[in-house]
Image 1 (cartoon, rainbow, N blue to C red):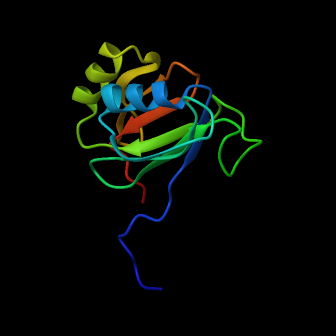
Image 2 (cartoon, rainbow, N blue to C red; image 1 turned 120 degrees about the vertical axis):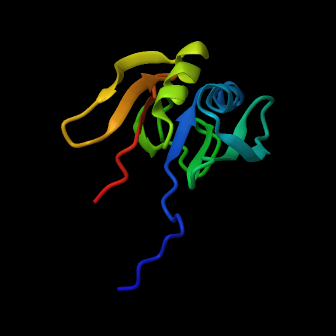
Length: 131
C-alpha cells in the first residue's frame, strides 16, 4: 500500500447555531472558514468547511438542514494534532472554551488538552500524531 499524505478524513458536526459555531471555532482555535452554504431558513447552514492550518479540517452545519438530517446538535468529539498546544490552549480559554482537561503532558508523549465548545462538542488538541 502506498502511503498518501493527503487528508481524506473530515469529521462532520451539527450545531443548533452553525453561524455562531463557525465564529467560535475560528476565534477560539484558529480554523479558517473556507465555504459556507446557507440553508433555506434564515441563519441555517447546509454545509460549511473549516480548514485546520496544519492540515485537514471539519465540516459542519445546522442540525436538520444538511445531508445528515438526523444528526443531533452538540454531540461528538474531535482530536486535532497541533504543534503549538500551549498557545492554542490560551487562545481557546480566552475565547470561552470550557476546559475539560487542563493542558499537560501525557504518559504516551503528547502535550494536550480538551475543551468543550458552547454547544457541547469536545475538542481535543495535542502533539500526538499517531504511530
